[in-house]
Length: 241
Ligand code: PXP
Image (cartoon, rainbow, N blue to C red):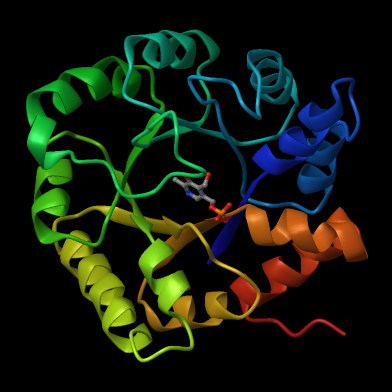
């Protein structure tokens, strides 16, 4: 499995004091040097962590694959069409939430979703929808023309190590296989850490995992390069010494 690193929380820390420390672009360069598949940022409506200038600067880095997480709003569509990131992941967004709390309801706004992704796909931006492991949502995405889904692993991550884990895991696995049978490619993410990520290998043909909080948290103790290397090794199933 490939690893996309979400660096939003480098910006969270920077914004706590203003100024430019820690430098988001320096973090992006470390991700690049670690040869991660993508650098992921979520440009939220309230710009609480990543700012427009961050996204623009990362987009300018050579040989970096930018995955822009964004809400399904006209403002974000305009930004994506202007910046042309390599990929966008369309996520639900509520102002008060601490982080993205659930998957997007694509089935409930299918026509809007189809119209929204059309110009993005025309510009060769790889589109994914961030959805819960739910058959109706997967069927809806398959009608939009988007080639990818990103499965929300939050429920599995929270259930990890409890009696709820197996059910949450089977839901994810079943959803991934169901989506692949529709011809969709499947990414996954949210709440994954150095322990619960290992079971993602039991899900066939996952393309990419997008992981942020656990990597940035670990980087405080071991440095960003080491934190990324350890997670990359877990994704690639190699053992790090
Ligand atoms: N994927 C999506 C669509 C997300 O919204 C987030 C959180 O921004 C992540 C992955 C990464 O989640 P975490 O920070 O919990 O690893």
